[in-house]
Image (cartoon, rainbow, N blue to C red):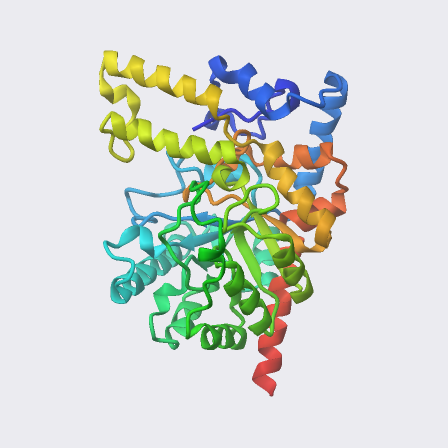
Length: 432
């Protein structure tokens, strides 16, 4: 994890992070060059960008559309009120001035068999209960659950963090359409349609051809979409095949979102959206929340992730194990391999991330783009590796010439517009 919040040309952006930002001097110049190696125009110009970005950032309503939670969330083991090893907790949110988040439940991470509908449904309910417990019992003075666009605005204006709830995969429905209303009553406000969980985002050669792209929607998808439209739950089309995504957009009576997707023109992975899909999303009135998931942004980052996993496997490391636990000699070998990996496959940066935003804006317009991190679900890039570094994204947007009004749309305005329209469609369906 990179704890250093960097501005262009190595300027450190400490948005009130205090003890939450740890300086790693050994990598400072390398990271600054990786993120901002081109376009340095002098310290005074860069300082002006940073100061402008601070003002713009504070005036915008900032929403991260996709932050995943662990299975033991809102317990003694994982209490986000404290600064911890996760990429998102309250101190990091406050440091990065990130005012609202969609806390996302991915039940497939917490069951032995993702095809076991009963286990998936139970894990979903546990996640929903955890988020409600967090807001209602553990920290009601700091955070509140938002059930609508208007509630997000009200909660943020009150000084609290706003949390809305997303569900990662419609496989949690199984064959029980009625469960959608149960999830909605718990506070679920968007849900991804059923998709194949066996595809990995760091696959570079695999799953980028017609074999995946032609997979159609699940048989129940039409009924699922209809029920979500009726309730006012946003349809999330992230990670669908090309054919399924286009079909879903055509079936939905309300705008849809891609809660955590990137752009296929820049990184050829079947989870990413091609230009035809982006145009369909625009015509639907929807929004793509471009995701800061390195392996979906650049080929190098995908290869890096794959090789990183291979190196850890070669040392017999289990998830969560730190390299310092290996012992002196294996540790030195491990560090040497990681340094070679850094040189061979650089990680994705904030600049790479905004390249994807730029493409969408040029193709379908500023009104159909938003931002998500996928923090604690695999997301994180150089310069935005936890919520405390969020200002760096705004600095890069300012540097590229986005106006304050445009940045406000990217950080939350477009997503709120979609939610209002989804709520309006639900109201119209209730009257018909």
